[in-house]
Image (cartoon, rainbow, N blue to C red; front, side, top):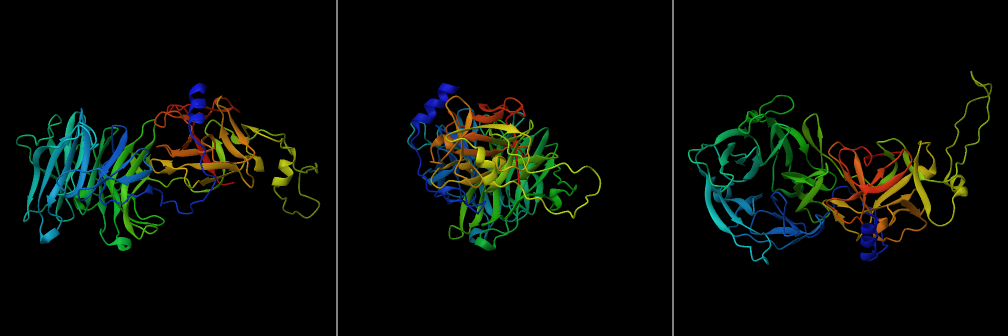
Length: 483
């Protein structure tokens, strides 16, 4: 582990030291993340892809910086993508959606062995039409979404014009199973997605209005069922066939109108969800891709913000607050006995940074954990770093002792220290991943493998170190509390 970390740190060039704390917790993606109706994000040949309405899509190597480029034939609206075996299947709709005044539509499927146009395996093959609407029935066959669960392949589709429907496909070919008839499972939603977890089937869909920029009211809601064919109900027992749905995420900060949920399961208990904001107010109110943490509470998915910039106590789930390992500076105090005071009471000021840092040594300072006492050596300011990049919707940040330039840094031996000056090197940059239970893991940018990272962990009651993250242990789980 130590040799790998040393090699990773040495191999990455230093980053610019220019900084900008983002006050906006929403605007996050870099590059050109412009897309509408993004499909589930999938990995192909080491890069990540999502496709949207029209022929285009987005590609990224880190889930943070997205550029246009992926192509698929067919055009149409609101595609979805799933990998089955060595093939990527793409479902999309042609017609419908009220465009040209009609709701006659077909859901078609095609496949390719690579999503990279430069690959020799990039070639789309038609599967055919798997669902249709005739323009008169109570359904509009667009916005398809895949789910592979318990060995069976399902496809949901539909919009506000009528019902959401489910059909079953052959998991080997993605063709409609012979004789399979569509089942109505919801109303008053569109842009559906499907999840399967702990024996429950979840139907997520978008309520509200779309395609009206900052005036769009899109919001993502969910119901669940023990059967893929329903009945789906929300947390109050209201059936989705009667318009129910528990809120998962909506407008937030500078992002307006959240729609088209897609699960991003990064392993190790880190789950996120992709979607689009109808309007990013910092990008001319254009529709953009977003990725945020997903947690679970009482069996329901809950969208979350990334950790906001600010000053925090960083508390280990094992016990103990992250702190500079310096000599204690005691607060002035004298014993006056118990019982009522003889003198008038007055506020006692907290210890100041100047008082606390009087005993700090020069150079690198070790970091350990101790009982939280509201001391300056236990307070850390976290801020995103401009130009440092990010990973799947979370920016890389600097973590400094509040009011100072002492920055938390990884070392080649797996220890953590506070260096006297932040310079922007990779070992001084961190990503903070929210876990599915709402706690966090803290990962250095210099980790050898971002998908199986080293993470800051309490390997003892007072000893933080970088170790391989273990989702079954509380050692590398942290909470951030306001001082």
